[in-house]
Image (cartoon, rainbow over the protein chains, first blue to last red):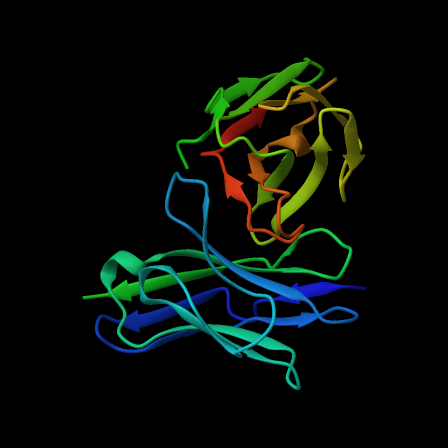
Length: 112
Length: 115
């Protein structure tokens, strides 16, 4: 079955420290990969996507993600976390010819 | 995203009632989607529509129906609401031009409680 896993329900980071939110996927063929963020009482907002090409993808708000085909991962990263980055983060994948599949979400908490 | 609006934003209803959630968009996108979000489960696709004459079932369509009244409007109906349909519902749109794998734009969500 095609799936996306976010192994951590919650990630806690101190402001100014680097952050990583993990995502692994299991799909057939080459996937299209996405990260979305959900702030409280808001809809999801697109952060970045990997289609093809450079494995390091840069997105909104200083976030970036690294596609690793051998490890089937697409981890979200930021060099220096802000308190305002605190939100729920979703990894998602579209298998070729398929529909968007979301991970279960990771709650990021950045403390001052 | 203010270009995708959902009404109502909150709704409490009783078991067995029919309820409609509405979605409108001004982005000019052909593709529209309905998802439900449950804690710990992420978002799951209920129905999607690639144009006005195209309606497709998603992962969890049982108990739901949809209507695509126009390019800009996509409604979700619960014919006879039940408590396990209590969830946060999101409408989303995407542009079909260029790539069918374009990112989706989400509305603010409708919080539905079925008592």
